[in-house]
Image 1 (cartoon, rainbow, N blue to C red):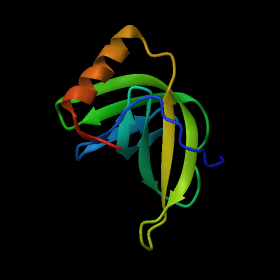
Image 2: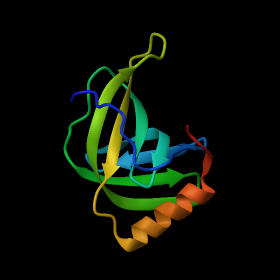
Image 3: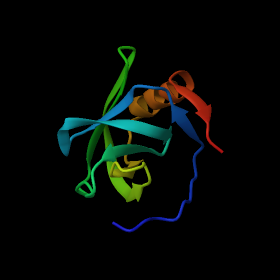
Length: 119
């Protein structure tokens, strides 16, 4: 997947510690969400190889206080990031066709479970 030039329509926010994502195409793994907006999110993961580009569904898990499930997503980019000797990648996903309820819950998550807005 090619690296995509940044073109954001939505404000993005840092997530608090222990904010995780689970993706339907990789059900046995949890990923650390780096930042999130009403349009999508980015997470980091260990490895040298890209994840599959299959569209899928994503669950957001924030401690025991909040879970938002089955958000439809598609991959936007996947690139290597520098993290010392550990091979790490950053994957960006776009939310697709959210229901009104999912949009409302995501808005609630952005207000209550993020730490700060990114510039």
